[in-house]
Length: 194
Image 1 (cartoon, one colour):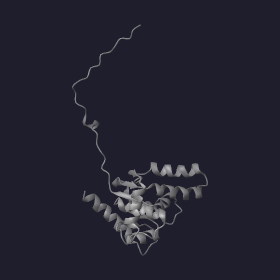
Image 2: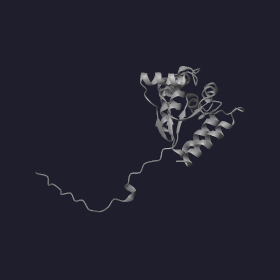
Image 3: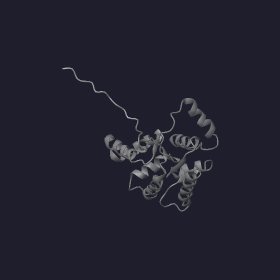
Image 4: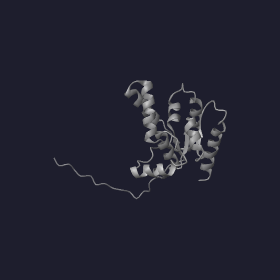
């Protein structure tokens, strides 16, 4: 038995507007440094409350979350120490990634030439006293013009001298208590100016 071929008919009707493709507006680029990510993932961390609050504040802005591979590897290493199993540590990071309310950006995949260029440009005076991972993370944030959020006081103090868009987020910091309000103000201003 031969199957009868159906003749397809297309009408000239217009598609409803609801089917039109719309692009979501992507907000500011915010680099989450590993100390910030770790505090966000551990309710026992002393900075958890402040970090969770800032993270909640960012939700409506649909940020481009800049989380370099170095941050993920550093966070994974610390979580693995706590969880003791690779599968558990991976689940924690996968859950974090799935709950990220914005766009994930893992940064650049620099060539050796680009890494050397970062060191030449930034290591001479600006952020040369940082440990290698922290140097690379800060360099990623600086060269991408990201707002950098950290709970690492040493990194903050070394980078702050030459890069104004790094913010120290801590629950009990009297010296840098204005950083959180300074950050929220910058985010609001950056979205108004676009």
